[in-house]
Image (cartoon, rainbow, N blue to C red; front, side, top):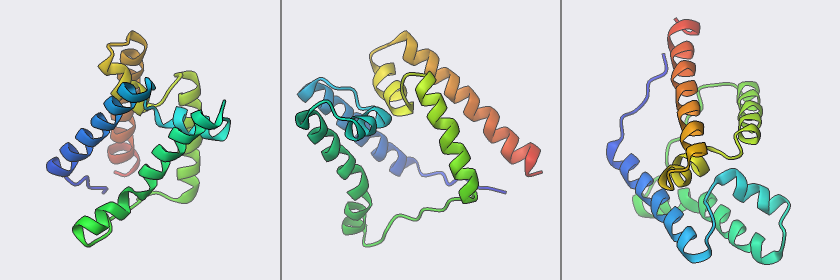
Length: 144
């Protein structure tokens, strides 16, 4: 059975940093911090200026574990309890959802909810409900 670690302090700290980064991005350049939109703008940028902030944000996301290591003296433990084909299938499904939902969990769940966007509220309720059903099925129906 897959066990989820309860880490309230780390979760609170991570959530606060994501929220702070979102607010700072909106305050400084007026952009929403949705991860898939940021990545899409790096792949097909409208200008170098547009790509530069996106690249800086992605580099910050990638170098985060190094900062954690410098502070704590150890790398964060990452375990992936599914196979590579399952990760690829899941990524494909998420890609479809991001396309139809016009944004990802970070864009809708963090930034859109904070702006009280009806579309983001509907998207967040939909992906949270889907998550609950998926976790139930994986942990109690298919694994049991």
